[in-house]
Length: 281
Image 1 (cartoon, rainbow, N blue to C red):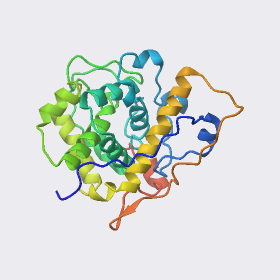
Image 2: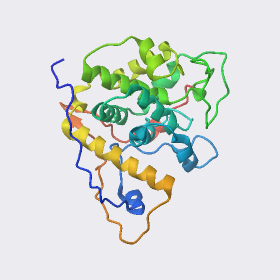
Image 3: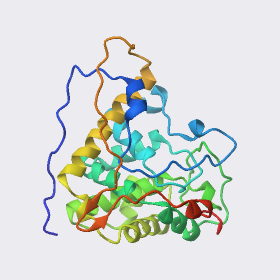
Image 4: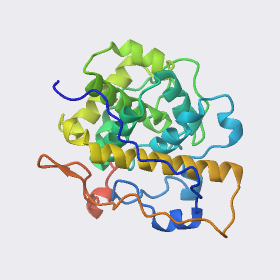
């Protein structure tokens, strides 16, 4: 493919770093400047956010906690009514055991998806008509694809597909869909569903991944992953005080990313489009 397979762009980590959660929440912006979609039910948006406890991640590979937390919050707007599960994503990453640069590329891919992707994905997603009821907090099924309505499809499939796209691009090799379905996805979804989601991502990106494989973007994504890791540790341990903690600068400007003439992170969704995102469903 003519591109470098892997490189290390990780920002140096200060072992004495002290995390200021209040400063983080006030000034941090993710890579995208897309508006946050409204809550899908009567419950508050806080209840819809990805969350995790120490019990959820006990025994899992802790190195993937930060990447899992960040990937879970990077799902495109309006894609799913189900809260993404950080432990599920963490397990997926542990099985895939990908280099951090590939995970960072998957973050950039997810950040480039917009509400048009979400609408197209929801409308045409291949469903199993004899399935489970919709649920905000989910228990993984014993057999793949058992979702009879798009609102009961576990949204981690989008993260899985983004990881597939990133891995195929960087490693410049193709693996059968069954491998990703079984080895990475743990048979939660069918090959057809995973292939469809991957195709929707590629179409949304215009089949252009190279502009995202930029050292500056990968470094930014890796830094955001590290910030997510420190935030989730802060939340689960409840440690740290207000005094003596150091501030850090915002890691992202929130502006659209442009590469090779392509705007990769879309502008804010027009009001008219947001209002009709699910009219067809």
